[in-house]
View (tube, helix red, strand yellow):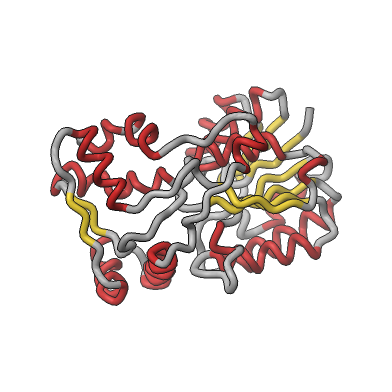
Length: 288
C-alpha cells in the first residue's frame, strides 16, 4: 500500500477520489487550506494536512516519504506558476509518482482557455524527471448542475455552445481512473484524455432533461461576444475567469471535445457514465 499526498482533497475530483484510495488500503495525506475541512477529512480516515498549495513550503515537512501525489488546483490566474513551484518542491524532496489532473483543452493545438495553464504545468512535470501520469478530462457532467437553478425555475439553459458535440465525462469516472493509475508503473509517462461514452450537444441535454422531468426545457445559445459581456454579471465570476470560460465554450461549440475514446473503461475495467444515467441520478437537483 502507498502513502499518497492528495491535494485539493475537498475539490470535486479529490472528494470523490479520497474514499476510493482509502478503500484500497492506501494511507492518504489529504490537503485542505480550510480549517473547517480538517475534521471532515479526519473523519473520513485520512490524515488531514492543513496547508496551501500556493505556499509549497507549508507541506514540505509532510512529503519526505510519500509514494505518489495527486496534483489538482483550483482555477487561478497564476495556476501554472503555483503548480510549477509545487512540482519543483516535490522533485527536491524525492521521486514520487505525480498524477496531474489537467484538462482536455491542454492537449489542443494550440491549448485553449484553462488548458494554457495546464499545458505549462504538464511541461514542467515532464521536464522534472519525476514519474508522472497526466489525465485530461473533458467537460464535466457535474458542470451541468450549474444550470440546475435555471432549469428548475425558468425551464431553460443558456450557454454559448451552439450545436457543438461534447464527450462529457463524470467526475466519479475521473476519480476511478486516478485511483487505478496512481502508483501504477504501467501508466508512468503516459497522458490520457478521459471522455464519456458518447458525445452530446446541449440540445441533447435539454431533450433528456425534458423527457425525465416531464416538461419542456428550452435551450438558447447566445453569441460568444454577448456571453463575454454578460457572464460576469450573471454569475459573479471575475472577468479573467469568465473570459476563459467563454473561450472554452467557444471551443466546444467548434467541436473541440467531440471525439470519444474508451480510456476510462480500458484503464478501470468499467464503462464511463452516460449522460442519460447522470441526469437520472441527479434529477432532484434539477427539480428544486
